Length: 400
Image (cartoon, rainbow, N blue to C red; front, side, top):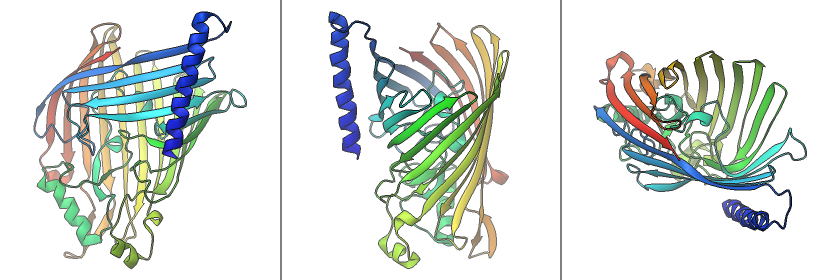
């Protein structure tokens, strides 16, 4: 399936080159073909305790790393066909350079209400994906529900006692879970990795929609070894100017690998251990103020006595323009985890530590496009069981 996507994308680029040449030579009057190359360069510096891992994803890529770049290549043919490739560089990531996205978009099939996207596509869940890049993210970090790595392991199955041991790994690493501490630590929604699939999207009047079938899950887009398929989507409504509301849902197996003996004991295949997530999101604006919010509830099938592990999380962030080039922004996040039985104490406790995060800062537009940001971030754990993680950072975001 992946080979087919790459073949389709490369074929589309070949078509674009042919059509572009036709337009230049004038052999196709009225042609409208565009080829574009651009991206974003981020230069950042952070000071604080454990700054390198508190915001890191599985491969170590991190919005607070010193140098990051997103390269975008695209072409568009007569407003009917568009192909995009996005490549990410991160100096702190294990693989440094990786393919983030590669997809073809076909518009108006059969009419303006129906469009298709095929390939390695962004996750159509919630409202943060459209503003995760640094040029549209008013802060530097991401919401917890879009990045925070829980102590659930997508590579294995654990009973209650073992899951609580994984929870203690967070304490061992002072609140973070680096890749060498738990490779398969599972986020709620993994925006840093895009998934292979097919999406249909469109809008009619005040309603817009996105529905997709992909290979992985929203928490583990690489979970394609279990042969499962994810069904996910979002429906949005814009009832009045300045207000947008959306609802999202997703379901798919999330395990990448698992101990065959554990699977045998559970009487299930790894494809039967599913993640189910649903959420609501909000966008509201008035004059110089814009506010976003999102709530997500997620549950993962597990071999604990409770048969599942779940969490709920939300964030609210806002941006207010003080002057034409100066703004202030802030975000509050919270993530709470369901409780499981501790076999040793016979009491119930969270399968991970409840956590909250504050991030606030200033943004100044150095030029029309380039933005300089200064932020302060605090990550706090329940009952102060783990010392707070604090950092101060500056970032220059330069689109090109």
